[in-house]
Length: 238
Ligand code: DC
Image (tube, rainbow, N blue to C red; front, side, top):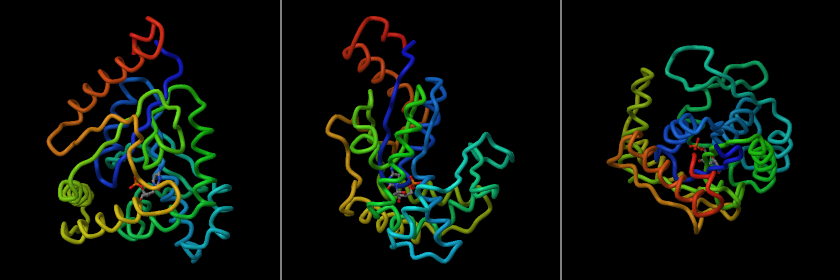
């Protein structure tokens, strides 16, 4: 089994990257890091402290020094893990429509991105890692062994997000969510620093009509083939 394995998964909001990444990581016995959580955490702190979400000078030290922990689930309410900022459980607080609407702003700041990228690279030194985000294959981990770019139509993504909110007993208007997703896509793709785009060597997966099991089976096949063509015979064993 390959000891060190780095997989980058990028794509727009709601494309199904996180669920796919977690499932793939579980099969590969890898750590799954959802980098969006880190940008959401910076945004949550900005809103909680009344800081300007567009002010890089204020927010980059926040991004560099915040006490963010991702631990196994402490409550059985559908979460994949528990997220703590200092000691506060912010798992669902990072997923509110207000954070969804605001998160692209701190994410566009070069100093914030530098601080977050540094932390993410540090985490990726661990061993086997599946990292999910917008710029993982292009900026954070350009040397990743395998890169995936996961997409779905905005309509599919909005419907999934609404289902997710309904499952947690929250109100959700698909048309509002669709508008917010389209705006976020435009901001994530249009920003000057590390815009959302596929790495030239990424394998594309369109998830509209795929189950997670099918995606994972396809991805495992790609991983095996990439490792086989990259190096020695022992890499056949993913
Ligand atoms: O994947 P997500 O929806 O949780 O990400 C939240 C925001 O964070 C997204 O709008 C863009 C930003 N992000 C980013 O700019 N770069 C990443 N690697 C991950 C997320």
